[in-house]
Structures are given as C-alpha cells and as structure tokens.
Image (cartoon, rainbow, N blue to C red):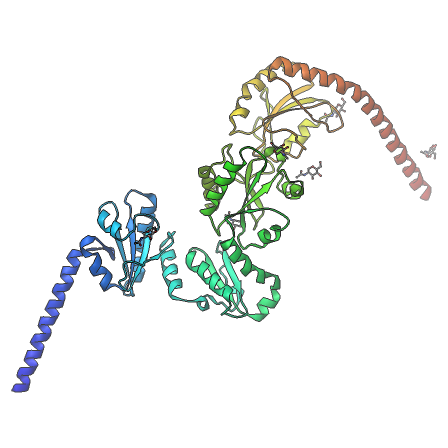
Length: 495
Ligand SMILES: *[C@@H]1O[C@H](CO)[C@@H](O)[C@H](O)[C@H]1NC(C)=O
Ligand SMILES: *[C@@H]1O[C@H](CO)[C@@H](O)[C@H](O)[C@H]1NC(C)=O
Ligand SMILES: *[C@@H]1O[C@H](CO)[C@@H](O)[C@H](O)[C@H]1NC(C)=O
Ligand SMILES: *[C@@H]1O[C@H](CO)[C@@H](O)[C@H](O)[C@H]1NC(C)=O
Ligand SMILES: *[C@@H]1O[C@H](CO)[C@@H](O)[C@H](O)[C@H]1NC(C)=O
Ligand SMILES: *[C@@H]1O[C@H](CO)[C@@H](O)[C@H](O)[C@H]1NC(C)=O
C-alpha cells in the first residue's frame, strides 16, 4: 500500500514535471517563434536562445537587400537539413532590433555570425553563403579537420565541379595543411580535397606545386602583375578563369583603372584570377600577341577560360568596378559572349552602300587587286565610333558610281582583325587596288571631301605601282608556264 502510494506520488510528480516542461516550452515558443525551423530573435528572447543553443548561427537580416533575400533562402534550406542536430539557425531583423544589433556590435558586415556556448561577445564570422549547401559545408568544415578532405584516388573527383583545389601532402601535420584547411573553411563554395597517395604524388610531381599555388592564390594579392617571375605561378594556379587587364602603366588613367580592377578582384577570389599586363613593357609582347591585343587597344580587359581557351572581351569603354564585376559575373554564369574569330556573314552584307564585313570576309574583300577599299574599323559600344556611321554612309553615297571603289565597315570588337593595325579604334583604313597586301591609315579630317581627296591621291599612287606589279606578274606567269612545259617535255621523254 505504501509502495503504491509512493509510486502514485512519483507518478504525480512526473506528471507535474512534464506539465511544467510543456509550459516552459510553450513560453519559449511564444517568445521566440520559429518560422520554417528558424528562430525569430528579438531583444526579449535573444539571451534565452543563446543559453539554450550551444551553436547558434544568426543571420542579421536587412529585409530590403538582395543579399538578405538570398541568405534567407539559404537559411531555410539549411534549417531543414539541420533539424535534430546541435546547430540552431536564427534571424534578427536589423531594421527592427536596432538596440540588440548595437549591443551585439553587429551593425556592419558580416551579416552571419556563429555564437558558441552562449558567448555573445566572440561570435565566429561566417562567409556570405551562396546556397544552403555552403552553410552546411562551412559548419561541417569548421567542426572537422583536413583529414575529412582526404580522398584516396583522384578519379573520385567530381568532374562537374567548376573548381577543385587539391592539396598534395606527404604528411598531414605540416604547417601548409593548416593554411590549406583555413582556406577551405573560408571558401565553402569551393571543393577542397587532400591526397596523401605517394603514387599520385610521384606521378603528379609537378602538381605538388598545386597546393602551394592554392595557398598563394589565397594569400596572393588580389591582383598579380604578369612578369617573367609571376608567369609560372599564374599558369600553374588552380584557378582556371583568368581576367587580364592590358594597360599602359605610364598612362594618366592607370591608377583609376587599376584600382577598379583591384576592387573587383576581391569579389571573385579563387573563382577568377586577376592579372594585369603592362603594355608599355616590351617583354610582354608575347603574351599580347597570344591574346591578339595591340598596345593601342589598351586599356582593355579579356577573360579567358583556360579549360577550353575561349576568350571573352569586355564590351565597354568604361572600366569601372561595376562594369568589371558585371562582366565577370556574366562570364561565370555562362552568359558572356565569346570573342570570335568571326561573326557569321550577315545576310545581304554587300547590298547596301556600306558593305558590312566580318572576320571571314575581311581579307578577301580588302585585298582585292582590282578594287580600292575604304574600311571603317569600329567598336559598336563606343560613342566616338558610332559618330562616324553617318559620315561613312555619306562617303559611300558619294562614291556609289565608282565601280573600282568599295566602302565598308567592320565591328572590331566581335571579329579578330588579323592585320597589323596601328592607331586605335575607330580607324579609317584604305586598301589600294594592288596585289601587295597594303594598308594606309587615313590621318586627315573626318569630312567626305577630304576623304575623297585622300582616296584619289592613294589610287593615283597605286596605279603607278600597279603597272610595275602587272609587269612582274606577267614575267612570273610566263616563267611558270615555261617551267611546266619543260616538265611536260621531260615526262614525255621518259615515256
Ligand atoms: C565592434 O566591432 C568593431 C568592428 O568590427 C571592432 O573594432 C570592435 O572592437 C568591436 N567591439 C566590441 C566591443 O566587440
Ligand atoms: C604608354 O604611355 C606613355 C605615356 O603616355 C607613352 O609615352 C607610351 O608610348 C605608351 N606606350 C605604349 C606602348 O603605347
Ligand atoms: C570553361 O570551359 C569548360 C570546358 O569547355 C566549361 O565546362 C566551363 O563551364 C567553362 N567555364 C566558364 C566559367 O565558362
Ligand atoms: C581582277 O581583274 C582581272 C582582269 O580583269 C581578272 O582576271 C581577276 O580575276 C580579277 N580579280 C579579282 C579578285 O576579281
Ligand atoms: C593571320 O595572318 C597571318 C599572316 O597573314 C597568317 O599566317 C595567320 O594564319 C593568320 N591567322 C588567322 C587566325 O587567320
Ligand atoms: C618541248 O619539246 C618540243 C618538241 O619535242 C620542243 O619543240 C620544245 O621547244 C620543248 N619545250 C621546252 C620548254 O623544252
């Protein structure tokens, strides 16, 4: 009987405890309502939440910002995955909770902080996540170690990954591993792996540099100058998208352009490697040749995908931070238009007074020995170029009765111009009717009258030269014929 009573009392007590617990929970629920598994924190409930959750990831949310929305979506996805784990996600509306935000010294960036073990003064900054996966990766890597990144076989790598940074380490306790892993934590959107396979290390001996290069990319200044010394480092860097700024270091606008390039570079670390090339340095001739950039075209920015070697050209006259960032972003999203050897030949390209040339037709048209061709090389986005269109129409109209003259234009930004051009775009160039592939840049006033005077003078000059050319040609053709006849005789004799 007594035992029974005791049991009863215990049972009662249990009931009371359960009820009390439920009530506490309900109170907590009311004061820190959850939405989609995310605590909505305010001044009144922040401390309690901090005590209750040993790992509290807080998003300081600015409702009207684009980044705020993106992070909110990432948070919702991550909250679903983290249900039942030790992590709790929370949000504080910075526009409503000004006092709390000030108390937490969270007025500036970053907007995401991880509070550990109830310590409100020393949160860990979380890099702005691209997706819920970045949040999960960041939390996971923080809790883990470089050992978690080990893969035994490089063929395990997911080939679809845009970028994978591989660390080749003989020993896991080298100081490099620490740097490498710190980079991995800070860059949750990038795949990092570690391999210790001696066979792999021997086979890819040179790639051991890859790990050092990875750290260098990470530690390197956001922008690297291309020089004989840095070339190897740039080419062996694991980042396979390069933005190249070709600029004249002695030019007046160098400082502004470099500064814009540098600022943009910070936003694309480990995604795009930013390199600048001084076009005033004769030793850089080779790299400029490779990218087919002439010194006169500077300042100019090219993006190159080192996987397929496709080059992209920034279509703008202005090189400010916004323009550069937009270009890089559109490239990463696959929206940038590659710079092409040639645009397709437009329908009816030769039916208008001004013929529209492209890379494929340029040389065939301008190096016609029977026609004198006047070409406007233009950049479609340049005001100065477009201002010449009416003049060119006028010129074509004035010359329309002259069968031996062609007036044409070509978009120099969309077509590779394989001519040694001197002078910047827009450029007005005359190709006289000769067998020799000759080009004369028009230096005069931009008036139809002056253009025609120049044309006539050049045509007169070319005519004299052409007489000599025709004579040489006649002799040459005769010589060839004679040689052929001789050969024919010889083969007859042999028979
Ligand atoms: C508040 O943040 C600023 C800038 O991040 C920092 O310099 C300062 O030391 C912080 N103050 C406290 C009390 O944590
Ligand atoms: C670079 O700019 C300086 C100063 O304007 C000029 O003298 C020099 O010729 C330029 N170099 C090239 C390669 O255009
Ligand atoms: C670079 O080229 C590779 C191979 O064609 C392609 O898979 C990748 O998407 C390209 N990268 C960008 C940013 O366009
Ligand atoms: C140029 O004119 C000559 C003689 O009339 C002709 O034989 C030749 O085919 C012409 N060349 C071109 C490219 O039209
Ligand atoms: C450019 O021109 C040179 C000489 O005229 C020629 O050897 C080369 O193949 C041309 N390149 C292209 C891409 O057309
Ligand atoms: C070819 O042979 C014929 C007779 O066999 C001769 O008349 C002619 O001169 C020869 N031509 C040359 C170029 O040797």
